[in-house]
Length: 404
Image (cartoon, rainbow, N blue to C red):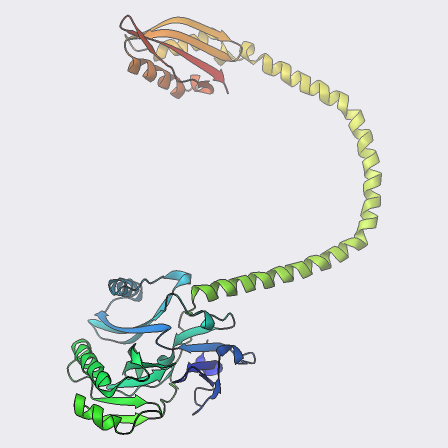
């Protein structure tokens, strides 16, 4: 999806929203809530305020993207943020620049829990609102979003980091304190002297705030009514970033649509089958009578075949050499160790073998039955586990096998 063909929705300094139907538009219409937007068939993308989407910048060792994503997940978990990858991902990272040794990335992480009033099924994608704008190079940006004061910094015009640090009524001293702390952190990450100024975004700043902040921070300060959209932004390779509630709702909507289509097709098929039903029913009536007659003719021969098969099955112990009593006894004798096992009784009856014997100890008795189970001939029988009893220093056991 390209943002050039999408309707963009960005938060205003108050609780309203601005609608941009073109990234090149200087101003957008205002709505009270995202549900009021009519996308008119175009993809609808919400630029989330920092309260609903945190943006964190990282400078990491340069490597391939799969490994880099795992490093990002680890770094975020160390900061107390739980990231979910795969189709249910709750974050999206952007590669801002890379060298032979380092990669500078910016990570957008959806808030958990995600605001219910922003979880709309008609949304095509979510992103950080400031990512849709062009940020001044080397400047800390102070802006108001939905009643909160946000500090952001760009890297080559693209959003690198943003966070909320106060309400809309925050004082100049508090803003200056946050600017100084952020400058120290960013200079350590991106290089000494990276921050060269401050940009205040909005039309509600007090007069003299620029001069006050310049005095407190030692940085040049400028005030602009708003930041321009990023006309060079290309989101066609971005993986979709949607909250779990929206993904689930969209999946249910897709499944419901499929069900409706299948129901319609099924209905049409039923209508078509009705035209064939009468002719087919007539055919069934004719063939039913014929089948009844055929069944009556074949029932007696079928009963004879079944009875013959049962008789052959009953004769199997008598006609199959491998089931002769002497053959089975011979196979059992082959399995007996040179000493330690004595067979006292051996009985073959129909499809069952009953062996009673004595062993030097219970372990030898159990091992003997396990050998019966592994034997190529005797394994055709299901053997019960012996329960040896020790008597007169010998383990008496009984093994019973039933033909499968």
